[in-house]
Image 1 (tube, rainbow, N blue to C red):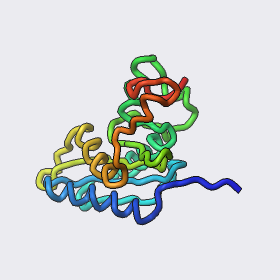
Image 2 (spheres, rainbow, N blue to C red; image 1 turned 120 degrees about the vertical axis):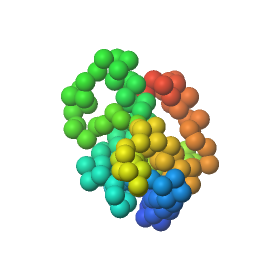
Image 3 (cartoon, rainbow, N blue to C red; image 1 turned 30 degrees about the vertical axis):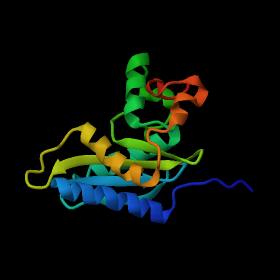
Image 4 (cartoon, rainbow, N blue to C red; image 1 turned 180 degrees about the horizontal axis):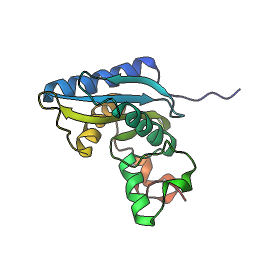
Length: 166
């Protein structure tokens, strides 16, 4: 039987709480999704006032980052650079918006943390995709000692900007 390391419930809850507390500190609201190594959701948190549509987007960001082992922002750059379409990847869950970050620790890809729909609590005005990614990083940093992981520079000889393998 094969076994693999993956994010568990306690790590997912801790990462979600870190993002939630960072949102509260900034006066923001958002949706947080934490996925295991296969991209399946371990934790989904939709804060009060967060757009309901962002629930699926955050879920898909976490799935994409976990499956590709790259930030969704890197995937977006790769699509643009190579003039690729989503259909090439064969799954409608792939998303190319910043906010999904893979989790890598002790030589293993463990899953992903993703944020979507970051908005101000008082006005519900949407923040930027960069804010989604910054909040996701707060959750990832709780789990990882080294981010971004140095493995990106060694993985198949690619740099982080090259994204997924061909």
